[in-house]
Length: 87
Image (cartoon, rainbow, N blue to C red; front, top):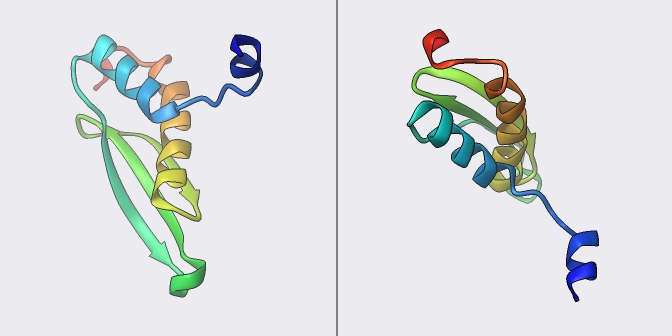
C-alpha cells in the first residue's frame, strides 16, 4: 500500500506554499480570483497569489482550485529566490 501511495503521490502546491511562506516570511499567502471567463458550463479562472503585497504567482484553470494550485506552484519557485528584505 505504501508503494502505491508513493507512486501516485499528488503534490498539493497550495499547502506547500503556505508552509514555506509561513516558515520563511511569517505570513500566509492570499489568493485572489482575478478573472472568470466563459459560459457557466465552460468557465475559466485566473487566480493570483500574494504574500504581503507582492505578487508571487498566477495560474489559470477550469476551476478556482486548479488555478490556485498553479499559482501556488509558480509562487513556490519565486519564494525560493526572495528574502524578507525584498518584500
